[in-house]
Length: 356
Ligand SMILES: *Cc1c(COP(=O)(O)O)cnc(C)c1O
Image (cartoon, rainbow, N blue to C red; front, top):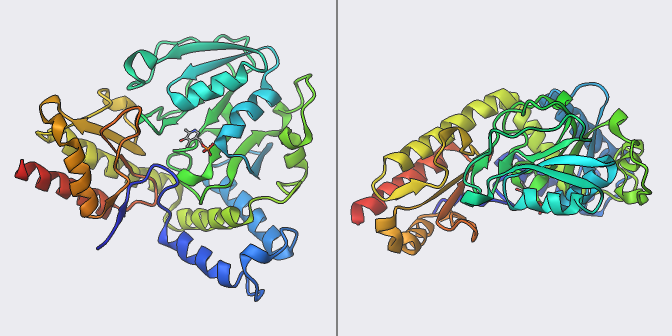
């Protein structure tokens, strides 16, 4: 039976990425060796990193004066590392969920944190709108897509300072104005590669403005200077990331991808809104994530939630159980998920409804 991969992360990768990575595990760049057993200093792997950097810059229209890094430690390390490198006195943070809260917690270790707004009062099912970011903060930090709750900030916010953003679960899903940011970071395992690498896009001249002593490995400058090769980088995930980037370019780049993402999400939200049994977790349409669609059973059908997960799983829908903080269901529609899978899930919902 065909499996449809709705996992939230690690999550679906393109068949192109999987096939080329599998091939390289056997024989990388015609070296007669596996990608798992070659030096990261080989010219063949250096070419992989160079091309991954170049394609990231091309796809996201990264302006001059920014470096693209491939680091270890996950997005979670970036919560601390970003504050360590950019927070002098005070920074503004938007609290839109667990990931944002974790970033806030780490930032507090390094300076004053002004939480300008929070949607915690409604279990993060909306994006706060009327907040003010003071002009005297070092930066404004936000999470563009809230993977757990299914909310998303679809456009770069308009604020009087440069921004730092956790784009772990929607990077490469839509165009971004990189020039508004000091730093964009994203764990790769949601829209790019297997877990193990974090992509960072950092503004070079924004570095070096904090007074504290920063350990070598936690300084962006170290990695900028060495082109992500200060120490052994995550070789396999970087190789896989390059395959995904090539695939993104081959299908028309980020604008083409965004168009398909909108079609996929619109179709699923419409099916949920029109159904008799299901309802979306995020009421405001403009706040709904295109990447993670969260939904539950209406109160009168609540008892069927477990049955639906079993029913859907038996039909090949993998990973649709909602996060424990939200419950219900979550269908992640990352770039690599085909429309066919969205159609299959909708069909499955219709069949379940017809039976009850
Ligand atoms: C998954 C996720 C993280 C955590 O990433 P790790 O790489 O596991 O540290 C952080 N932020 C967001 C928005 C995520 O979706």
